[in-house]
Image (cartoon, rainbow, N blue to C red; front, top):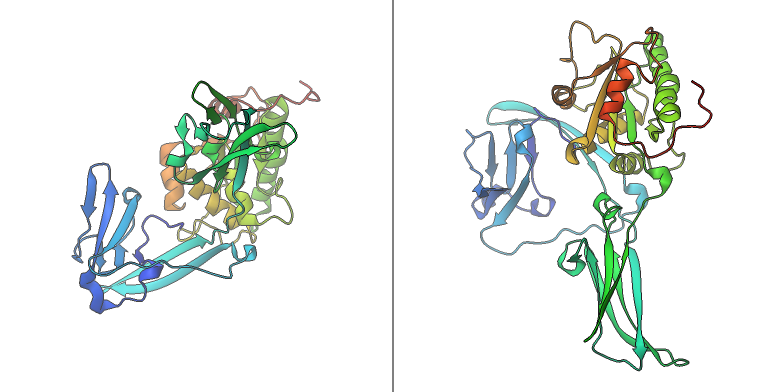
Length: 391
């Protein structure tokens, strides 16, 4: 769910939508914190309160991030199941509405992506343990020295020994099943298959790596403004000339630029979400006219699809605490950054934008003050500088 700070939120869990106002006394809402479980008030005087199964945030703030749960005081809960969903349905849906509560008018927007998960990853570990061995052998999987059978999202299926008829050699195996591969499953995280009997213990360790073309040091996202040719030219010079020349050719960084590296035919939402998740840094490029709609973190003048990139990239950066670099092209103007969305204003307060001027003689010089500051904020480069680069 992608929501903006300052918006109002009214939320009812889907499986509880069958209840109405007559059932208000059946429910309590709770928030889980490090200090323990906090019961949420039902008083309308509170910014966060509930009416039975319905939870209200009037309005949202950054401090509201966390885990919330609703409890049914009497009766049994139920599980909502969706059937007949296909991969084509796995897109971002946005709802906008205006509503009244306690004699006040609020607006809300919410974007939700329907997650269509693929097949789990299965890795089989098979060990040869000797001749005619039928018991006394145990095989299991560990992630970072902890048994995966004790971890959510993983399964460890141990198979009893089997005997090969030709050699009478005994084999025991265990299959690791990862329901969905996440970033913390990838290198340097290690998975280890362990085999033990009454006398010995052996193990084999492996690491998972994503495809090289999906690993990037920085994902670059920007807002495209159609109404100004001058600003479009400045943006084009930075994205197609200066940035690739310095970061890719001179410094050896792997850069994914929105619009340049997109793969035709791929689901756009899924592509952006996954590429940002596997990137080490998010670079947000701001133009003098990045007049972002404060409701959706998007600009009405942007081409179809670019709003999705912008919205998901910012959301991922906040959720996974991604390293963020803000680049301001030209002067910001007398209004400062007050015209930006609340999300972007929050990022501006955390990390001041670095200003790039196209008319500077060092605009594309890797050792200029601007590019030194960018490189200082970047991770260690994954690739080698291009051998074709000429100083």
